[in-house]
Amino acid sequence: MPKDRFAENPYPDLEVSTEERHQLIDLVNGFVEEHFQTYEDFVRVDNRRVNERRWKHFKSKDDLHVYEDRRSSDSGKSMESWNPETSQDNAVPSKKDTPVMLRFGTAVGHLDDLMFGVVNPTLDTMRIKASYVHDLDGGAILCPVLEPTEEEPFRSLIIKWMTIDAPLQSTSLVKVRDFVYIEATGILRFANGDRVGYQLLHSIEFPNTKPRPNVIRANLSYFSFFRQIEENVVDVFGTSTVAPGGDVMRFISVRVATEALLSATDLVFCGQMKKLSWMLQHQHSMDRQTQRNENCVMCNKQTTSGADSARAHASCAMVACASRARSEGASPLSPSTAS
Image (cartoon, rainbow, N blue to C red; front, side):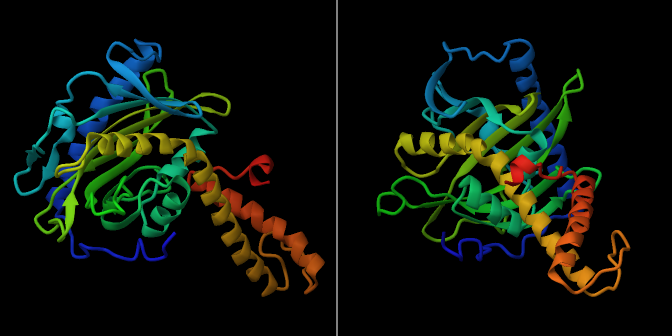
């Protein structure tokens, strides 16, 4: 991967007012509530079965399946982008052949691991996620609106910019597409108490985020929901619509939307690797601390400068790391995961 694909921020001066922050939060809450009801109906009413008279199977990966809407795809409000100048939704022109894709199935793992892979509110975590999930080619954090806290470690709302590796982009046939969008994550609950993780990506416009020369601004609307249904099995449901802008072949829109939906198969592994990296970094920090003190800062036992002592008291650092990971919503790796 090129080292500089996350080095560029084309809109470094973007800021939002307090009023715009509240508007963004309200906008996201409305979108999430609407699509959350769709997912709950899919589970409770449809018994997790796809209406194949409406949806045509397009592609599968592992136990995730992507379907394309058979109907003419007037995607309506789901493909509108928000503009703070009007405080209203501005419609993005929609062609009838804009594809609407549906994804459902399961992923192996645990919900907390998967959500830890989903959440990427900083440039570093955005870069790490892209290296495992391959969901974008480059990107930048434009403006945080809500950041994770100890009480809500999976809740975030971040304004971002990204480019994607679209088919034929390396040729002169297709120009580079970029997106300015809000990404929101968090945890909700069904009426029965089941925890449901969500991820939303939705295009947004600001006066100072105009497309750059020779780059076409695309629009997207992407929703995902995740729910633990069995030990080591996570239910996955979502929709994706991409309007690439300009005159492009329809298969490019379908390909981009499909790859985004199927990338969920890598989220659990991404979360596990992020936790492992975090634990190793903090263990190294704790090891250095114990070497500077006569007594172990965790167990208060006398230490020596030998390698055996360093190995023995490294376990204390791991305990502290695991405890802190739990306090931040990331369960410690099990022995089977860390191996």
